[in-house]
Image (cartoon, rainbow, N blue to C red; front, top):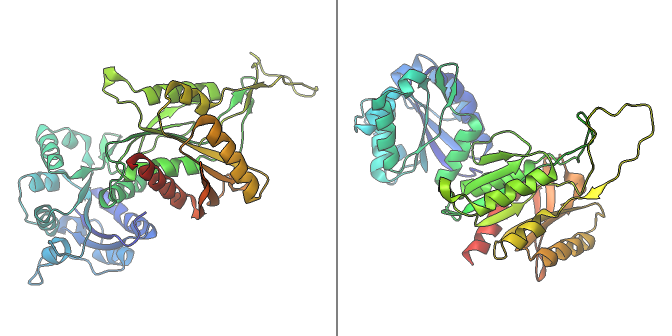
Length: 394
């Protein structure tokens, strides 16, 4: 996600500075090169040696005759992005007032003047975060194009955002916005059909591929709605559903938009969920074990068909998992649903990848097989987002 990106990491004196070692490791795991700049206050919380170990680079603790701020964040500087994590109320206020009296604020002044992307992850006690002056400072700095990663409000504190959220927003700040201004709805994971209050019919889908598609679309500038039976994520608004019927209703509503809430209709749908093909009439009470039972299965509506009927011109990307194992069968099945629902393209894969880290997928369009991907699911998410961007651009 951050392969080859140079990140200047500014650390100020919040207790959240203890998180910076793992944050630096995660940035590097995602492919970034990291060099850190710390304030005197931050040095009292996390030792520069620890930060040097995490970044594998010397740490800037003061601005010297080497003009480290220009070397890092100037117009021809080393960094592609300046990440301030954690950023205290003091640091944000100084940046808003163009005060640069610490190595971190001096780098921020330089980066903003040079037009470098800046990402800020604030961390402080909640009353400080709610101070009118701090909120005004955040609004002012945001108006300059700086991205803020919202903190987690917990236990009376505005805690620093998760590493996932910070890394994703750094990727968004450094990736070409090929989906900027687009609204994309993504379905993900398995659905479940109730048999009784305890038991369900479901499948082995983990939802990782759909979540990676949603993240990749967000990184490329899209406004993303993720429909799934899973947790909230920092890169999309989440509509939580359980059954196939609930997923269909949520997707239809998300694709239609909401004029009252100023939510535009969707520009595209990516149907990556493994939706139940059958449902049953659920029992009101637990079915007793120890006796034979026959379930009367009824087909569920096909989501892509229903959305296609409602939105004839909406670009829709389908996914098709097959157990046959050979490419010819996967392409044939993908082509069948592509033609049936007039899809933009279909991503076909072997069902054996469900729940696995790695995957192999075939891209099928009206002309037949047009591409292949093999690697991790994050990479597949990026490939799908790029194919979608090309589709919408065309």
